[in-house]
Length: 197
Image (cartoon, rainbow, N blue to C red; front, side, top):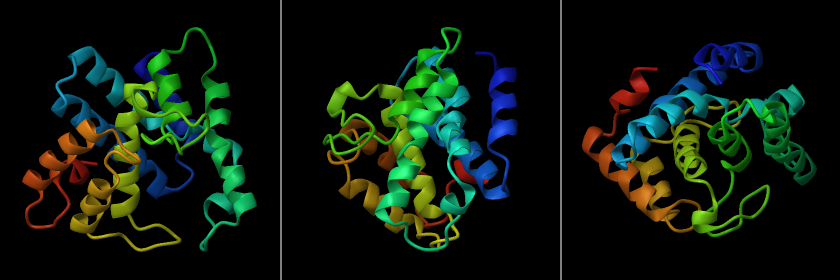
């Protein structure tokens, strides 16, 4: 998949509201940062940066009124939202599409302990690229204002990530992320990787 194809998918499928557009830009920067800080090779880092914005592509198949609901989702609505990973995978299910992109889309809601979805994968059975995007996605969701919640302070968001290491997140990747973010944001302000978006 070329960068032009990725950009076209982003434009066609994600920019139905400004915050979604900003979110996917931040996910790209955060995912790149985690991959680089973890010492992964440059090819993988560039692939993560390119494909991570596609993580929620399947939400184009979920009713907008559910995605933008101002209150808590019902269990039935949550089950509908969970289908976005399978919808996204079907969108990308083509031999010409890099498996890294497919893995990000399908598995970024899996949890280290095995309680995530869609397949309940655990530990290193979850593809590395999905483990990286999972941390970036949750962190950005926490520190961003949404229609259904205010933004969390950075320090509180980092504490949530810390508490979820070994539960939701790969412990090594969580520690790598936390170490870097705490150095960049000692004042509690958003670190530069978010401000660049």
